[in-house]
Length: 124
Image (cartoon, rainbow, N blue to C red; front, side):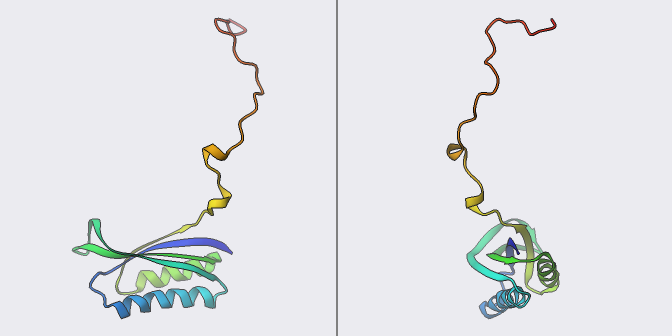
């Protein structure tokens, strides 16, 4: 299983029932193929950087789940043909615990001698 997240932009003119239906369908698809639904965050209605289908706003959702690649392919296929979905982008989620910030990294050990000031490199 791989961790994924999808940024989903829905038509702002969709009824709340239709929006929840699209989200429920996505969740059921992930869970029926053996995946695990992590969360869905509603970012709400936001202004778009550029118009999509003559609309200047969209309703944003961030979906997080664990699934295999075949399930992700099927989910993106379904989202492409679903009315009301303006755009979506699926990416592999990177767990915060797997990466470390610059401050948390141990200091590098000096493996080379420091250059001597004013020294001429060998061969010159």
